[in-house]
Amino acid sequence: MNTSIFRPFWSYDPIKTEEWLEKKASEGLFLTGFNRWSRKFHFEKDDSETCTYRLQYEKSNHFPQSLVESGWESITKEGRWRIIRHEGAANKEPLRDSMASRNKVHYYIFMAIFIYMLISAGMVGLLTLTVFLGGGSATFVPSPYWAITITAGLTLWTLVPYSTLTLRKGLKKLKLDPAPSTERNTSPITFTKWRLAWQFAPDRLEEWLETMEQKGYRLEKVSKRGVRFFFSEGEPKTVSYAADFQKSIESDYFYLHSDRGWRQLFHSSSFMSWTLWAKTYTSEEDKPQLYSDPHHKLKHAKRVTLWQGGIFLPLTILYIWIISLNIDDILRGEIDDATFWMVAVQTIVVIEFGYFSVRSILYYWRVRKTIQ
Image (cartoon, rainbow, N blue to C red; front, side, top):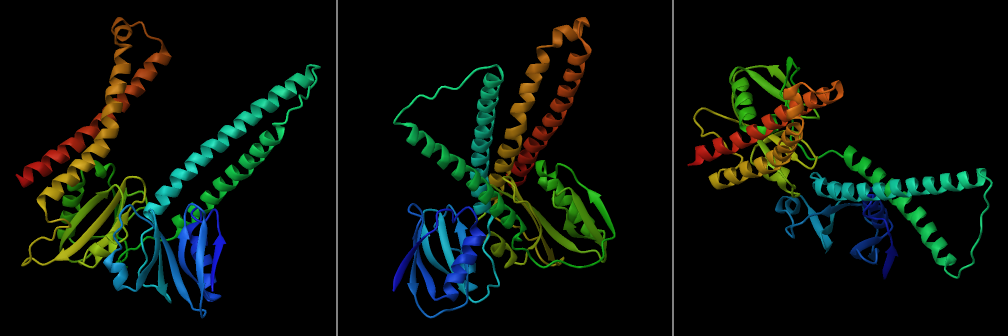
């Protein structure tokens, strides 16, 4: 027996939808497909069974082999959405970064619309109150279109707040859901060091961490923001480090590298996604590389420079232009205190943003020089 169930907001709280699918399976209803436009899920009746469902949102049509080998099965795919199933409990979980990024964009859009609606309603309410307090009166103009206006208004004031809250709730769950990671050493932390803005010169960070390992200082973990590094003391080792930047991460990204012996120490799931990897090797072995293809390394460096420097370089030029507008007054000494402090702050911003831009460009040239 086949049946279909309408679920309009299924993608806004993916974890809740997964739990719903698992509950249906325990009741003997197994997913066979879904339509993302009609928001309907299609089920087939069978013997009840315990299984795990996961939603994926990927640009590529490729289903990771690592997930297949760990027992995951692709049930259905619609557009960029795929629903996969595992019989019983799963030992490997698919990545949720792309899904979280997609829902974050939707959340910001609905939040902006909701704020606009609140401001508009507040202004209308304030204007109405002012008219009544001033002795004015309201005049009702009959119209056959009032039904449409009221229906549209009620729909908006129901749909937008509900979507905003549901997306926010779903994003909180995704944030609490841990990303796949490799096993870490539990040695006691001896000391910590701060490393700011390393993303603009990741090769310098790799060299610094490898030098620390040679001195017997093992990196145990990195803070959530990626600026504080925690070390323990031990025997000197030769360890290869790789700071990898990806605009978007596919589901098999972590498993691909961890299966090759790389240890994940840090991952940021922001729109600039950085992951720090480490792999121990002996003096008789060649130094392992996360990516052995030199052209891929250069492409990676170019991507880092364009994304990092591409943000700060235009801002640097913009602030230099703004400062130049006041340069004549500065040279003549005809400048008030407010303008002086504004120019001072802008100068600091120019130095900081310019520093970030130069570091990114120099990183690209260093990588380019090593492969030529």
